Length: 551
Image (cartoon, rainbow, N blue to C red):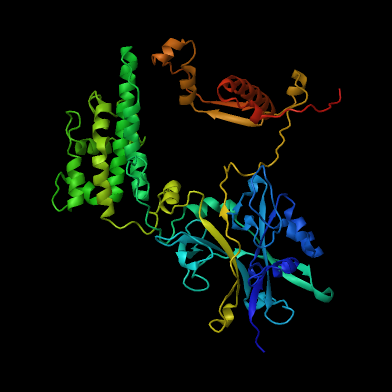
């Protein structure tokens, strides 16, 4: 006789889950357990072997560092409607999800997983992406699309789930535990670690689709529109670089300092134009080809507008198109791949004397920005990240309206590959939705750390510590450090330093970590006391308690 197979929560939670009204939804959900000790595995095994309600005290609940919380709550509790944020092992939090595979008949007998027959049990990580124009509601499947992580950790993507399991979907491992059952029999329970520490991998991958961005406000800042990752790259590299040049103070005296600042601004402008050349070659290749060919023939209306905007005067030194080509010609020297003998990679005539005026006129009013965005909108957004390009996490978060990160849940799956297609994979109900907390989360708890300082600080005691850290300096870096010798502060302010090459050897300095710790602690306290008059942070920084020490 054939019996249906299903996933239910861990047996020690059955009595509590069956008390839920409305079809006992948590009875069929994998349970999320939260532990706050490095010995969580021993604690989990002990709780499972006991099989009592103590396991309910480890059910994950929303918490903060100053309000730790864990434990089962009855249906209708306000915490069940609050976003559950999971913290990382570095914060001292460990999360395990558990469920039991049973046959749907009287007594819910355990269904064994026959590994010898190719059967397997695994855990699936799913991401919830809101549908266009809808507010995500986990209770309403019409408001979101469930996506699966397809591929490995290095080249995975989020793809829509059309069946029970997506082709090539990542399976997270499970391990078996035992819990007491009826009449002294044992029940098998499956458990798995939640990959909270893989947050950046999951968050940086682009979803299969994203909802349309909300309309920008009427008085939007042209440098803060990041509704498209390509726009975000353009603004972060080109527009923000020009904006920085417009805000750089330019001294008028002494002449030597003014000359040095002007040379630095010309070099910065060259790097901004190099970024512009790279952006055009990657995102608007037709415009870049036209610039190299010095002809706008064959360009579309949107691309021609960008080409013509770059025809503006570049301070009497040709046009911006000429400047972009010149910057691209300086690429080997700017990036350090050219001959080291090039002492002046950017000539003094580059950009003319008024670099700030050039940058201001180019970005004022957002005219060039709007033309670039129009040309980008005429091209379809890339379906996936360009190989070799690092993902823009902030752009991805803004693009999917996920400031706090994406929303996830877990499912358990039982597969019998040798029985396909007669037996489909058995997928569990989803776990409670959750978000993955970042490493630097202000609400995350702090893992207790103790730094033991040396007790004996006499010369006899300090000489016992080995010099286990070696700092190696090249000959060039050593010469640069020695230029500061016998120099006055006024000379350094004027940019006048010695240029004696000296001997042509590097240097290796061996240091002692305990002594470095003492120095770092003293310097830290000095600066904290000085800056306390501004921030008043000493009350929040440290608490010093005396401890008895043997004389």
